[in-house]
Length: 305
Ligand code: GDP
Image: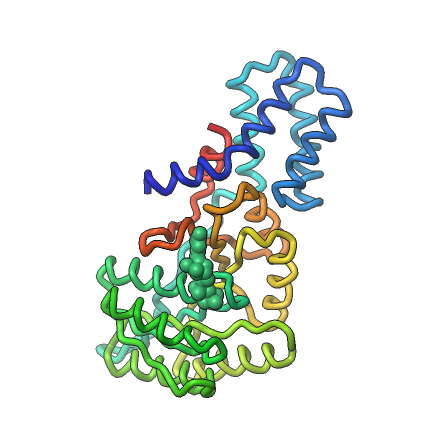
């Protein structure tokens, strides 16, 4: 975790450092506030949250009088945290709470998002975290659109010790998802993670497919979590994607991947605002250990330290 934090700090601190430098100027004139706005917008914080933050900062700087670096840092920290939200539930719900004796239904997590965002990798990494936590996991390779996805997922499964349920290439994603949960029940698994396909060009196709996957899985019991995987490097494009998915299926959490490859961490603020759904996990690299819970305090500290 320390290593991940260090990496996060390296990739993100231009935003925080930039803001602190600007706020430390002797004269905070209109040009400087505009520069602060630009810094936030460039980091993908989004228009409305940027305006809110700048307004709050202006107010607070006014009553502050003298601006010591420590005070500015504390102030910025508080306001960024207020924007991100510190008392949000960011647990990935992997248990569905249903059970009668030994006949428990596993917690089901659907992983959705556009191809290339890191869905399969995230599913594999999450399986690894869960297995390390003592949980038994079944993987459902319901991304039958991308030819290599099932192989990739199975490789992850073999690496972490989770069985992968897959179907024929181009097969019906919903029936694979159904079978994966059935397998999970038969094995008394704790969690079933289902990797889905994410083609976006036909929204109705996506809607039909994802809706069907969810409905079919729900024949076994409720879905505990629908995680939307977004690539942090795609900025505003990612937000457009997020909106489409949110229309199709009830997203319960966001995984922001490739945060190691961008200084635009503001997307965390923008996507939460856009969807009204918390960022729960962040991807900080391609390796098996590079998935971390999203911790607002650690994130903001990395921004401004
Ligand atoms: P999918 O099509 O959405 O299933 O995407 P994949 O899981 O195949 O990931 C696409 C590419 O992104 C792969 O090369 C992954 O290794 C890479 N990737 C996934 N997550 C991260 C991340 O957090 N950081 C970085 N740097 N690369 C990632």
